[in-house]
Image (cartoon, rainbow, N blue to C red; front, side, top):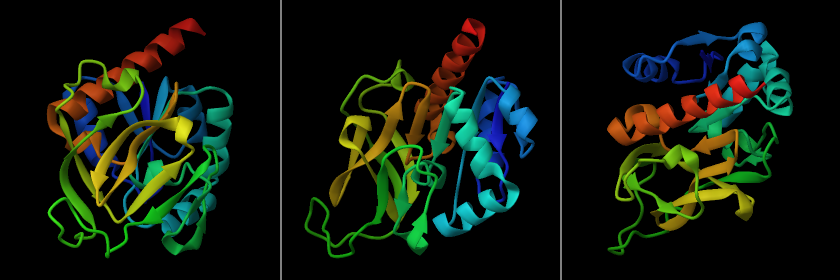
Length: 213
């Protein structure tokens, strides 16, 4: 079973619908015991980093998430859930979880796209990935696949963590992490077949880890 973190700053329902479509058992929960007993955890997020961190802290879920990661529980952060895995976000000048080194910055409205036009912020819509390292989350995902993005801030993790990048005014990390702790700036649950494949790959990894324990 996969647990979806419920902290009133997420996109839990869309993630749950995607998992239901894949026949993957899941639960939306803020219960630390359920989170710790799940095979893996999905940490979604929409809205602002400051609000998300405040909700996590109020519920004590910041401590629970850090403990799960320390114990090696597989975790997938999505959008704001991806950004606040880093040390700091320029959004609301927020000190974030700090479980992966890096920070989150705002797109510069003075940057231009490939045709010389000023960027529209937020970055919203479909865009591709430029793969930088092998990642099992992308197994059986076509190289040309596109994913759905909605964000005004972008992650800047340590370079060794960058698994795939995307172009929007500048090249930024859109998939980063390490085995068992991944983060996607895009929304796999809203990205059609490529996103569903990524979620299936995450669940398969979680089952493998659970069976090995």
